[in-house]
Amino acid sequence: MMSDRPRRLARLTVDLSAVRANWRTFADLAGDGEAGAVVKADGYGCGARDVAQALVLEGARTFFVATLAEALDLREALGDAHAIYVLNGPTDADVGAFAPARLFPVLNSLEQIGLWKAAGAATAAALHVDTGMNRLGLPPADVAAARDALARVDVPLVMSHLACASDPGHTLNETQRARFANVAQLFPGSRRSLAATAGAFCGEAYRFGLLRPGIGLYGDNGLDDAAPALAVVATLDAPILQLRDVQAGDTVGYGASFTAPGAMTTATIALGYADGYLRAASGRGYGVLAGAKCPILGRVSMDLITLDVTAAGGAAAIGARVEMLGANVPLRDVAAAARTATYEVLTNLSGVARHHVGAAG
Ligand SMILES: *Cc1c(COP(=O)(O)O)cnc(C)c1O
Image: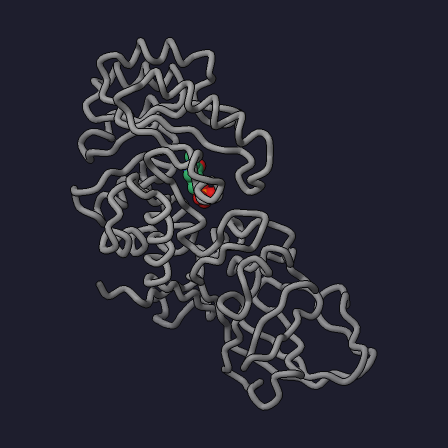
């Protein structure tokens, strides 16, 4: 028999009022246009259903996910009133599943356009043109053929994706913007969408009719620069399991990679890479307990991390929860400690016991 007790003790708290405030920032940037919401990868680890339901209360009407399964799940959570686009587009095997659930595929190639037409093109579809990312999307050389092929298909949205928007000064941004504006002219009846989170901050010229913020909803601006700041959405904490006084010369954890320079109090918390806290933050990340910064000592283990809690004094007690991500431990700091992107920090936490606050309408 399965125990009712929590299998993992770390906890992710997702503040839905902060998600709504962040979406509002993009809705304001969109002006007369619209802000959509990207909730792929289970809402960047924050819970796609809860996030989307909260955003509906705020006025969001258009959602993007990566896969058909994500879209079906979201359709169930939202009811029929909202537009859901599937970024990966249809495959031979699943093309028939879109229309019954009123899901809109994003068509990324002439092959997918062919599939969609062969299946009857029973709902609208978006067209994704690749303007320089060389990832998903129709190569520019195929756009004229696509327009002809789509002559009798309802295409309410033409989109593209920026490769370098995190650096607004990067020359590829303007190149992609100009290519996109050019291509979009071939679809005069369609709305346009170029900017994700960072692109929305690259200036009016990048915003077009529909913004597609993802990471921005979850608290990071997607830019290399920390400003502008967005509301903090995700807080990760974990309880102290054991405290110890170590002396100068004592080592901590696997590989004895940390040696205490003097006497200190250490705390071992119930969080590790099995929870999705990246092992790459070994010896570099930190937590905060009662306002005191508590550096990670040595390696992140599967289920455990040991911190220097000397500065926390009496607040360091068995069961006290240490914040490892949140208002006092910025997402950017965690990403920098793990030498990765904020995106990976969040999506990696999708398995942590999660609860939502700030939901009320
Ligand atoms: C993931 C994704 C987004 C959202 O990007 P963020 O940087 O998280 O805002 C938007 N559009 C496409 C095509 C994507 O794949």
